[in-house]
Image (cartoon, rainbow, N blue to C red; front, side):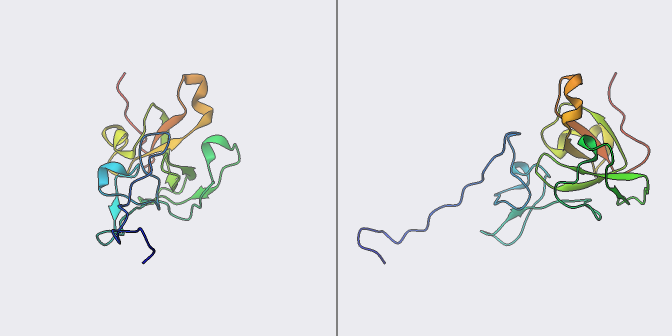
Length: 144
């Protein structure tokens, strides 16, 4: 131990992104902190985890790339495309639309239990930079 140190362990803190939640792969204390709503791992070593990524990889975002990368969603929809969530996780989306959201949980009432809040600069003309997306071809049902 170095002179002048107490030997006490430094407490880990969650790092919140510009959406007010913790990115996938970063330290978390509970599910509510994670953009994905999933904080997993052994005590003291918990991290936010992704869901419904399929074959998608980080940075593949059909919402901002006209070509888009195809994927098969967790529900079997084969007309799906890779997007990026607000927690920087890859996500295979079969349907969605521009919507002001911050976390995946914000989209669940409209797009189902496996919904995600994705980054979408193409939504700027609608006054938002995010979209709610779901893994089913049925789409999302937003309030009028």
